[in-house]
Image 1: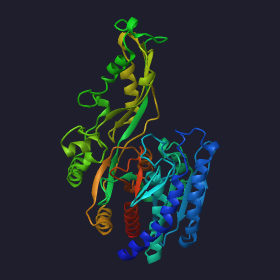
Image 2: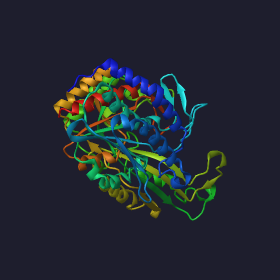
Image 3: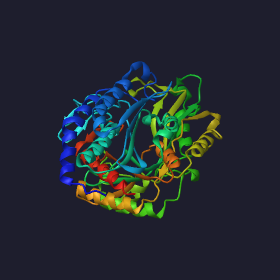
Image 4: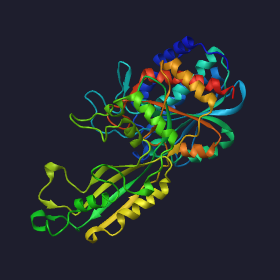
Length: 473
């Protein structure tokens, strides 16, 4: 591998981020290009197209320097996909670099002066929806390749894929991957820039991702609401029945999911990595979350908390219907309660089968003969990374020291990137580097999401080193 001057790499990366990438991300954050699940009329509204045009306009300025080509792939009824093909100076297999540009919805609770579509730059943080999840990815990938070009460091062919449906579960990505299969070619390295980091002090690699299933659980007890003084004690509350049904899935005291079909054995390697990650993070395993005063995490053992959010199933109730706000609630026994459920699954559990099992459990033998229905959504598979090759382990460790000044750390992520399993099946012999910039308090999907700019820069440096090392393998 050709030697990389790290001071030169650092200078180039800082310059392109400060002068070009950050200003472009400011424009991008202002575009409310919500993923199709949250904006069914996305084509009519045109925000997705605005985001695509912004990305393409910036990328086209860099194509000639890399002798690269760019196309925007489109299919009826599907979100667009940006495909950038960068020829290599070394023959061999291809490296695929992935990101997405669609966004989560607004969410409430943003601090004063901030908002999902209001870019705010405070010190090292760029606030607003999508900068960290995952708008920076295309810029970081191209920036890394441009940095290698500046130093004359060879690399193999690279393709950059930026999709626009990831926050909806990537329903369009398999179609495009099949349609582009011949153009993509044989992939031996996948770099995904849509994950998290345990802190901002080192390179974090994602070794696994939990799967996700979800759906709407509804309990009906009456055809219309009635006076609670007249009916309570005779008509069972729909909310109490909802609690009974949920107790079939979860231990209310501990949060443990009770269904064996939703559990998996944790590999020994992941147990060891969880201990190392917990030692590196310390109380940031839980302190990164905005607990209210006096609130404690689900346990005291840090390694067990890491495993809870990466290899154990958990149930969250993320939405309710059928109830007025407290100030508008009279003495009425409500006719129904409806809840949105989100179940995170261990990486190796079959999500489709898990969804079917949940439906069977909650709908069987409804208490008091109430009408209990569960409508599941599309299941998202988890992912467990293949064993990392020695050459890649070595360069990642070196890259973490060079960019961050600390050794690399590895940990599973509690969130889901549904396409990772699909790519694992499509490229079974490929190595995977899954990393990202979503660290403590960056709050993807929630209020006050921010991009930690120095981490974005350092990840760009790491990608450059990994792509350069790939040229020799």
